[in-house]
Length: 509
Image 1 (tube, one colour):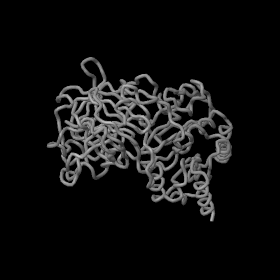
Image 2: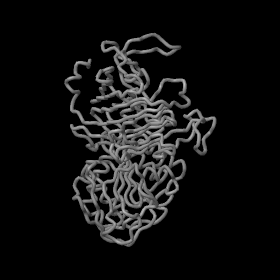
Image 3: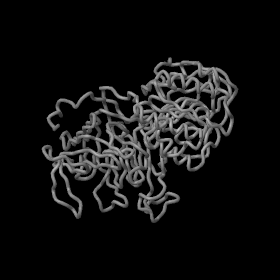
């Protein structure tokens, strides 16, 4: 009966106000139960009333099914603990979050579902132990521009129960606050000790803070402001301001400042790697996964002048993926082909690809790439457009015959709009071994593909199919593909734009 009442409430909320943020605050415990849970609920309710959010508090795991979860924007684990979901409920939660929803975890959320690998990666850490409650100094990192820490000083002192994690916090997270281990006793992390972070994981927006053990912490405006801003970001209502109008290099000396690596299923021909299915076509099977690159498919090297270069071997399908999402920007990079080619593309043109507005699970397309728009990087075809997964754009084009049953559409500024894959009309690629300059300008759903200074294509109305409806697709992560060919990238840089630059206006319809 209680579950039915909750479902009716959620459906009413959807009908009355589809624009409101809807949050499921879940506090089920099968391990230690924190006495601060009730204080946390009251604090969240106060925030929700102020922001006019709709919030449901529950410890009923039966809500974790596709129908019930669909009514929410954000799932909040408030000091949950232990194994709280069965397998079908886990699957429902994973499906919900990979569809672009948000997740918030406080404190003991890392002491939850510790044997569920996907959840551990979603959180980015697993609880191991803690010393007695005490004060400690937190070093606040504001370089990401995340609103969850914008109100804090560079150093803040909190009283709480400080978690030591089982392993180092995952490299795919963006750290917002780090514990200074010299300021308290009982630390176990050995220096770097993140305690608050955010990231994009498998399509979900994730925010976690290790704060929140004590009742008093939920009366501390510093924490409450973190939670409020974390929810706004996780719901997609607020984005992190990651760019300015000045060029930002994306290849730092520490490559994992800006990038993650995701590798797909090794082809059956891959050597010197354990557990390779010799019958694998490189698509079906279990991907190697996030930041698992045992063969250095993506290798960061120094050029002759000391510049940072990405060497992509191409041996296994994969993606170099930005940690951040971007929207309304100008991206510029240089690339050149290497010599090596690999199965299953030994007899095909050398191929890579620049994917943008990337959304959804890492393995949404061919078990290795996200749903995305693609600026093709392939021998003789640099600048072509491909739509991956659920993403599409409209391109002015004309027909240039068929190959088999497939119609070949070629870009024509004055042509009729074609929805789908489109070839450029003119090739501006340099001969193999030479560096090519590739640029992407994208603003509010309009994109321009530029090769060696020449506009080769303009696309319009970027969108994706989501829950059976077409929705605008104007921002997302950026991926660089490994797709069977050796390739090098350098001088990758990006800046924000407030409109299509004047010099490119003439290429618009």
